[in-house]
Structure formats: structure tokens, C-alpha cells
Length: 118
Image (cartoon, rainbow, N blue to C red; front, top):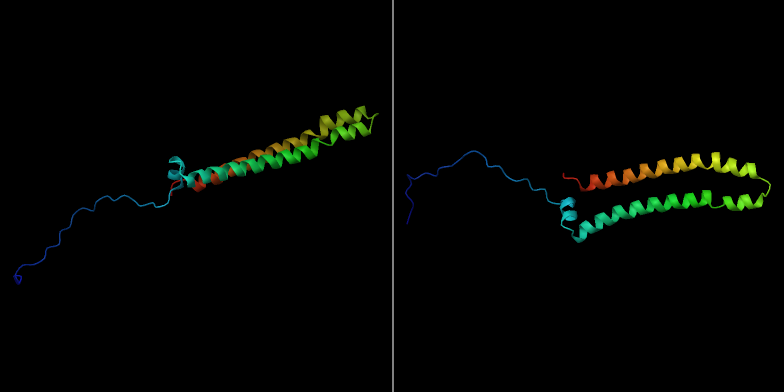
């Protein structure tokens, strides 16, 4: 059956519908749903925090560990012991603690930036 040539096609328009934005890949969803990929993200944060803590522990052991050997080598150095323990150990400890806190915060910010919604 041939179509009637007098019929015309009509274009129907209206207000555009609100469409949901397709975000595709969302790491936060992976973490919330506890998928394997989300577990990998959390493990990466934990490993970076552990690496930072072990670095601080190693530096602390190298800083404080040899002190008993140093004190045993100098039996008449009672004044030296208190000077070293009272004044020479604390500034490096404060600097080490400050570095640790800044590094841990940076690790967490990097992780948050990775998983935030885009």
C-alpha cells in the first residue's frame, strides 16, 4: 500500500528531560560495596601508611638504639648522658613526629582525592 503523499511527518518536541549523568567509573562505590577493587584501594592506603610508620620506626631505632652502647662506652659521662637525653634527642624526635603526621595526612588526602566523586 502506498502512503498518502499528503501525510506529513510531525516532529514532537518538548521540555528536555532531566537525564542522569553517567559517571562511569566510581571508586567510592567500589569501596562501599566492598568489591575486590575497593579492597585493593583500601589496601593501598594501608600499605602507604604502614610504609610511613616503618620508616619512622627505623629512623627512631637508628637514633635512639645506639645510645645505651654510647653510654656504656663512657662510664664517667653522667653529665653527658643527661645532656644527650634531655637536649639532643628531643629536637630530632619532634621533627620526626612532625614529618610522620604530615606524611600520613598527605597519604589520606591522596586517597580521598582518588575516591572522591568526579
